[in-house]
Length: 126
Image (cartoon, one colour):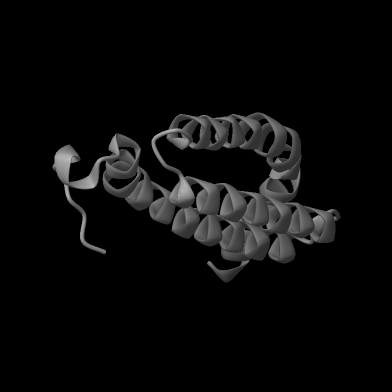
C-alpha cells in the first residue's frame, strides 16, 4: 500500500494517521495477541489448568473483538478515526482489568505448582 504523507494529496488527515501510525500498531498487536494466547494456552495445558476450555474461549472472543476493532480502524476516515482509536484504547484497558487481572492471575497457583514439580524432578536427576 503506497502511503502519501502530503495531506493535500490525500485530503484526509485521518487516513494519514491511520495508515502511518495505526496500521503498523494494529498488525503488531494482532501478532502479539496470537503469540501470547498460544503460549498461555500451552502453559495452561501443561499445568492442567482446570478452567482451560473457558479461558481458551475467552481468548477467542478477545481475538474476534480485536479483529472487529482493527477492521473498523482500517476503514476509518477523518470523521471516525478518533472513535476508532478510542475504541482500541478501551479494548486494551478492558483486556488488562477484565482479562489479565480477573482471569490470568488466578492461574498463578497452577504455574507455581508446575515450577515446584519441575524443581523436584531436577533434584532427582542430580
